[in-house]
Image (cartoon, rainbow over all chains, first blue to last red; front, side, top):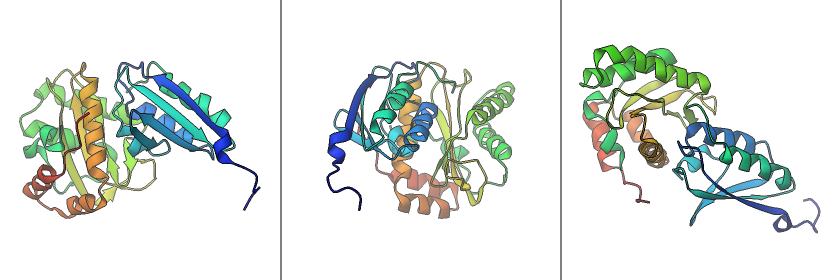
Amino acid sequence: MGDPHRTDAAVLHRGTVIIVNPNGLHMRPAMEFVRIAQQFAATVTVKRGSDAVNGKSLIELMMLAAEPGTELTVEVAGDDAGSALPELIAVLATPSYDD
Amino acid sequence: MRMSNFVIRDAIIPVLSSTTKEDVIRELVGSLHEAGYFRTGDVDDIIKSVLRREKLGSTGIGRSIAIPHSKHAGVDRLIGTLAISPNGIPFDSIDGEPVHIFVLLVSPQDRPGDHLRALENVVRTMKDEAFVKSLKLAGSRDAVWDLLDEAQPPRDR
């Protein structure tokens, strides 16, 4: 059952990004985000205002319909959260993907 | 926005005859053309553009659904169609499973917000497994349309 002293809450990492891609968070960057999120054991949550979705689910990410200018908050919790967060933020901050 | 706002009723394909990725995209674009959309000279270009997008990464999003799409100057508003393959078609989906439900989206060059909301709409509607199951069994254009028209619209942002 692992180390009883471990608390995942202690390794929550959070970052905020504004979507600058003129096409918004369309399918390609959303797929790239999910691909990277799935490489980590940490849980990944993406928040837009009061909406919160599972960052490992493409379908849920596309439900955010994040247009340019939208502020998204990424919360990553787990042992590898510290290395996951910058990679995930980088995908959301990418200014352009072919679509 | 709801799916019946952008899906062209006369272009719905209740039972696809195609069995390959390239053919299904031809069949989808061709069906919109037969329903009165796109100039004849644009059809091949739209097919190529949708196929080019697929080469960047499949639009098969899993759960037996694919949303092939393209921007094209040949439309002045976002339009789409829906097609069903009862047997499923290999589409390189993210979950590796064949695709049964295809939603093609063609949008103008300068309306990324409409495209994002259409994507949102499709995935919200298709999240309902019972709905997807009913679509697969619909069998006729009218039955597909009635299902789309009755689907709960997502809340507005």
